[in-house]
Length: 252
Image (cartoon, rainbow, N blue to C red):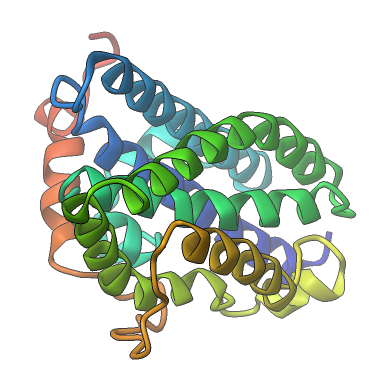
């Protein structure tokens, strides 16, 4: 593998893992606080799946550079994370959480579907495996978007408020990383512009069918994944606290 391709692929695996890791933590914050017991369990399972997917991507990075997934997850500072800002925002209410998960699930399903054809076989295999679980996630969150959008006046208002807040943030999902075009040329990762087209087709149709209006003003749009909101620092402080309490511990 060419050095420049390897470097770009390590960065991509890191970003993929960080998206899953941070979203997993936000979803896990609902454990014990879900609106009904069944959904409490369902979202906890989704959070566990996302954490498992982060492990897959960090495992692929390890194969390239020998890095330790636990060290990357629990001992990196916020400035080194490359997750999308959308995923680090506070959990908000149930409408906010379900909409964020839905918007990310559609993106991930489109990206993974295309990534199954990757010329880098380990990535293609991982995409096929993760996609099987993500399809269930999408079915779940898509149903909630419809249920809340078409529900009461209050549930629709909350969903619309969440959409107005999140729509601009979602655009960062389709901003390529530095040097990502190398991977696209080598047919290792999908072209994000094509992924965005599929994402827009799905989300636009379903949101409108759920009586939600796309924001006329796209709102805040994050740029590079090297910058983050103030919320990531506090999220990592909680997520990493046990590991950092005794960095030399081998067994808990």
